[in-house]
Length: 180
Image (tube, rainbow, N blue to C red; front, side, top):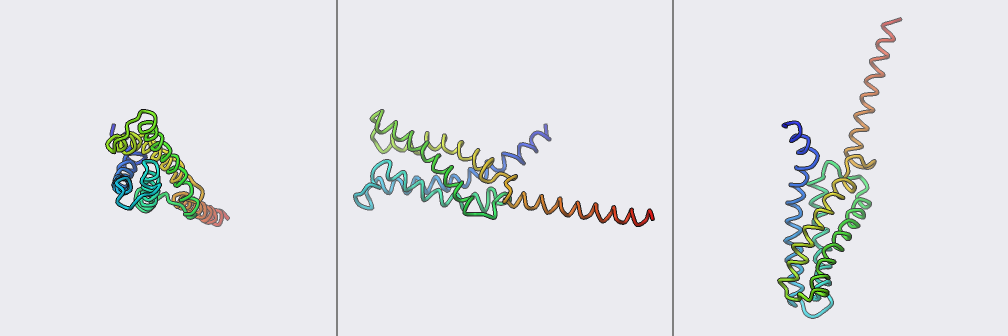
């Protein structure tokens, strides 16, 4: 049982916990910005609408969570090509945003639940849970996957394999020299 726990801890749980902390910070940013925009505190505009405010709040929290995930959660698996990593991270975030917006859209426009409480429950609770599960799996197993060719983990593994091959070649050369 300990081996199973160790395996799960190493492969999933420790990432999920760190992802949760980073996500909680992103959630606070998302919730604060969306409610600030929805309240009309910044004046009238498209950003005051349920979808406009949510779009902006998710965009801001996405940048914050990319930094958190890149430099803490998945720091061992971040990639040299950070622009490609950011593009993939953003793609997954946009798809996650689509999940949150779909929940908000159904609640607000199809079901007619138009209060700010209903918007928060549909966009910031139900949408958040579904989008978070989706994002975690794709960030962990695609964007920050340890086997990505330009990831720091893959580079370390290649360097270790090259060093082992050089060591083996040196040992073979010594054995060959001794055999003569």
